[in-house]
Length: 531
Image 1: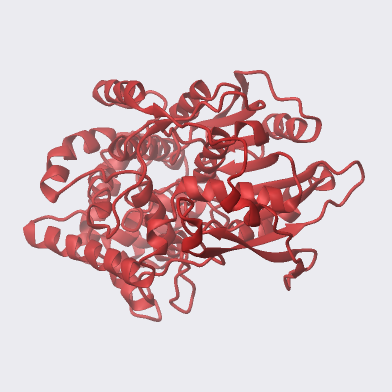
Image 2: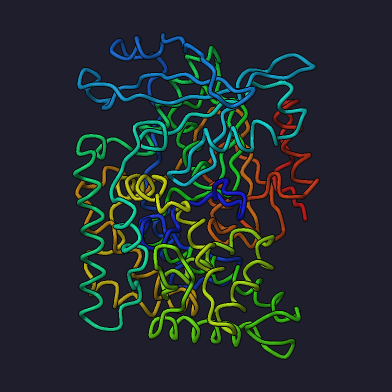
């Protein structure tokens, strides 16, 4: 879900080991169970609505709102950078500050400048500044870049904004290779021990910060950035988790909400367990689409034209089981072999973008037919943001830190995971077991969750465009429908297709509707569908 260009993804929390709380699993268009559906409906009734903050700025926050960014050269042609301050704890502004990294590319013209357009690619944990400088600031439509200063702020705890760090490279290598489908008590104990080590590392690195990296705090930071930029209202495009960040801003500051696009939406009213199981089903939907396409190709290692998607899934599961018993050589300079966990993540990574399907077929063929796991390892590394020197970006660390603070954990013990396995495996025969165990990681987090499931209504906000893709693996289409139902001023825009998020992915219909909204202020008709 973010901008590693090999896959163009902007992940919610679907990182099997590192991001269990928002390994929020995805309800596909119609594949979720009736039990899950009824549970989701019940949660919607129970979740309270996010209350807006007072319109007046508290006196203690005035110095933050009166900041003026001192722009400097970023070292990237055309972009400027600055640092702003926000209170570490909004309930106690005197307790200290946190530094927020901001970058912009000024409006290119022609036409009257419309203000700033903040962008966020999701995660949580993906760098918005990297996304701006590598893609949005140069790749967004010309008519948008002409009228807006393109702006990004790395959320607190992410990338350049006082990043959370948890494990070093070798420790992360061991962590990502841990078997997350334990076959017995010993393997389950090993998995729990890795979760504890990861959590303890995060707590030791940033004990104070770890208590203040919630989505609500990051949304409040965006209002300080808005004021510092001199904008009366926030204009914003958020993808995947960035939709939760944008919707939360609208819920807190409806009167300051400008033109918001929320692409690949999350449903904030669901619990961590519901999110996980629904996203699990979403990845099954995406795999089914991949499998149907794969078996029609001459180079598909999962079967031929006579192979059903269910059979292809069983063939993939059999391959995962073989790698569990005997890891596959990769030629990796650090000696890593392709384990079941790395192979699974490699496949999941390619589910975010149908453009990666040919690459996945090639990687699976090499692993299954030639005993060469290099291709799947490369896909897994791109997902984890591991570079060729063995260093990991802080994406995984920030992802867990935000997710585990935003919602209470999905499970309280390994026994609860075992009890839930039938539901997860029904949601996805291919990925269900791994997704269920991945949802255990926040159980051992060193900081108690401060958030709860909540509806976001944002009454009084300007029209908000919510975008959903019908076969999105990471943020199931039902979530876009749910968020659009909650937001008082939402306009639901639907892309009938595959992949994660829709804007800028090749649909002229989607792009035209969003560009018109951003430039002219005219939102699409509610319920508009594109293919």
